[in-house]
Length: 260
Image (cartoon, rainbow, N blue to C red; front, side, top):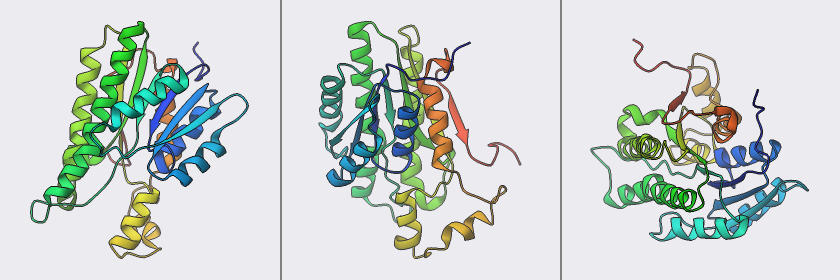
């Protein structure tokens, strides 16, 4: 029986300095990953996260990049490959949740949403797949998507579109490179109180500090999704324990899609 382990694995995680990405990075370290490269925009926050994650047996390196830049994906992957000597697993966890409906969506918000949530993950997957083919190695890609990929609330139409894009790209990559032993899966996240969502709900939308409790009381299980639950699933998908699983979109939410 295969044990859940990431021993000797080298993992690249975008958005790894906070929220879901940081939780995944911490879970990777706990499972013995050899080396992590985490990506974020804030240098101080990123270095602090890397220092917190690094152990004698699991090294973490931070690299600062804005994934909205056209050349960011290739720059990030080149750094990770040079720093770690190769990449065995890729996690696209970085993302923004800018609001925008069919009535008020703005072109500049559309461009930035798709640049970070879809374009950067595509070209990171491209670089990862090319590397895997160059050296003839297997690999695992985990993309963090959203339950909004299935439709989304009216006010997040543009965000939903960007997540639908990465969901479809996950399946496309899995299908195209199945025989190359390159697996690609996605996690469709439900509502979690990540730092970005805390800022959005409490400050930008003016719901105040008590918004989590107010929302949680209306949900079936009386709570929001915890980022540790996303991390647990992500490391399973990165590990050999998930076997040949590829092309799957796993809903991580307290509802069943399609149920009436």
